[in-house]
Length: 321
Image 1 (cartoon, one colour):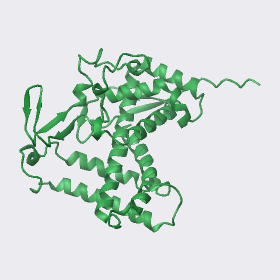
Image 2 (image 1 turned 60 degrees about the horizontal axis):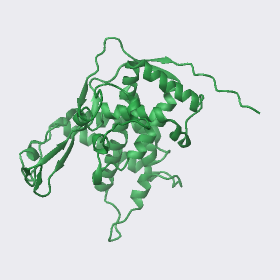
Image 3 (image 1 turned 90 degrees about the horizontal axis):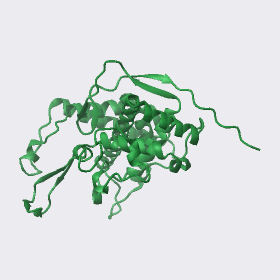
Image 4 (image 1 turned 135 degrees about the vertical axis):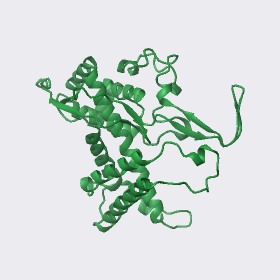
């Protein structure tokens, strides 16, 4: 299920970045490339951890370098493919980047262009894919939540595809997504470097220190949440007393460094779940134990093997004339 959601999210961000014309030509290769990189990369950069300067070279093992080259090759090929195709009026991020000029009127160089595309792909598909996969896992474990979700989808959509106009009525669907983000934040650790010496609660924090905001712990803190280890989407419905503070729920970070794609990601996830949940019910493979593992993002270790059961929707009411 995780791999399927990764392909779906990659297809969506590929179209948003490069336009509909590339589509699935590259999504599978991109997913595999980023997967290899995450599996190879170390969680801790010892050079930074020890406070050594940024200019000091970082050692990367052969597997990491190989994964990096594969990512670069895929993105370079996508950019070249995009440039080789006839111009289109379809909006895309890459067209804006190609048209962009710096203060001196110069376009982005090839390395910068590729790096921007890489960041868009990683941030735009990996985190969303993780969230959707965790949604399916949690729904498979909580039939009462799944039933309420299905009831809302049947009432609001009646079997049709959701649109942007439906978002304000899909309140429980959004609550399911937000509760999933609380329990399984895609970025469970947010590291920050201290740019100037600070005093916080009487503790001196030297310049250059590393500060870790840990949504995984913050979202499960017993002083901030009622039954923090339970899957209770109702806590995110209008009128709920949770979260107790906007700083208690930070799956997209907060403040000046808040994720610029927050609205896009939430909209994408809600619409995807609303579309797919109308047609099937995922069930975890019997005997499989799901364990989260933190690389760059929070993934289900070893994937998420599930079976698919078709779901019969409640027929839409006949219009009254």
